Image (tube, rainbow, N blue to C red):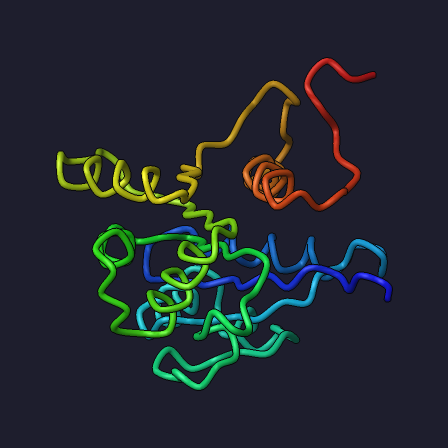
Length: 191
């Protein structure tokens, strides 16, 4: 039996940085069919508002992947018996990070993250807050001890990006690398 493509959950919370979610979705959806994952999207209510403010309503209406309501605990990936391969929370607010770190599972984002961690799958939290307080750092430590990955939305500049999208894509490419999905991109010291 041929292995199916990966199933990735992408959750968008109310932290600033909706452009990262937009570019990640576009990048994954534009991969060749052999690399292209199945994608499920969860939007928090604040995530919707921030995305509309930062990117306009066209971004939300352009999402072609299945979108799950934040309170839909009947979503397949809310149970370990039907787990996804990985989950990315992008951007990840400190409130969401704290709820995930403490296992509250009070909404679908937190429950799906809890399932991903308990099933030992990849959980990537793309944090966007600065500066960090001690509580943020301790919550990040808890996530790391539980097996999650903290990937701050810190772009790189050594490839000399020309615009905002180029800058943000340096973060998106790191996310896709950590998801273990092959994709073409420029690399440090590559010709």
